[in-house]
Length: 404
Ligand SMILES: *Cc1c(COP(=O)(O)O)cnc(C)c1O
Image (cartoon, rainbow, N blue to C red; front, side, top):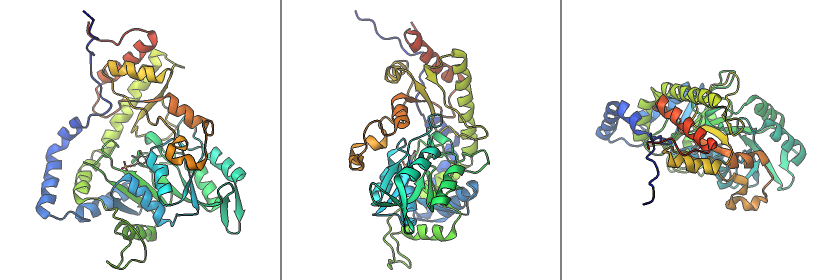
């Protein structure tokens, strides 16, 4: 008889939203009931409340609720008038939507490499790119190889840590570029100057996809800005560009957020800081356990920049033999994910950009080495220690810790 693999001693899913829901279910059900009773599903009072609250929370003047984080990025690009013949500088090591939305406007994504310690866009790489590959022609900054006008920077606050904005904002000022922050993973994160994610660029974009720290019951997103005129323009583009209704000076889209989603988010926003604090506590438990296990350099734990407030949407390690480790953890009952296995410059749909392997070595190395571990707020210390013990067991060459 073949031996059965041992039953995992514990199960640690990458994410389990049920305990969070159970804790707030009565309040959530009540607001859903209220929306049902009102039968007002489109851009009602819950949306207006959410827009005002997220704007205030993010140190911004205005918020515009939209249908997803992807649509937040698309709307931001459209509102800044970015389209065919233009280009936008961003990171190749991010979720697809960052560059996908740039391409969907007709503009060209221009990639610059990341910093290896934070995985965020490297201001140094952007500076070199601007100096070496772009030039002034008349009033425009032109990317020489493609002939496109460089219009904006789109840094991403990856995994819940703000991409240091000061050097990027300085470059944007020098070069006359707009700045869109992809803050999809970073609501509530702050830099060392206590600036909220999304508050420093022209427009900040949030996602409320269920896996984000503030998750809706489906798709939703929001744009924040300090600029009243931009906010109003986004509000018009959100409803097909019609203002007054049926009069279209602009071509927009249907980028509306649902009233039901806004109602759920208004409840959950009350808990966001507590949930993010518990994620950060879990990160500290991991950090300490990995330090005791002394697995470096086989495992490198994520860093928080000094003074930065990291909200740990993900806790992402670099690991030797990453793919084997992932299989070992799956057998031990531990869920993990690879964000992101293929950097965007190597995606088939972007072949027309003409990139090859080796163009952005840090992004490519991150894609090969990184692994996201479970970090959600309701995890117990026992579960976190079990994850680290399972990783120790892998590198010690022993089987997953389990019941005999
Ligand atoms: C989640 C995410 C998005 C897209 O948000 P959706 O709400 O899923 O459309 C964009 N950029 C980044 C970095 C993300 O993590």
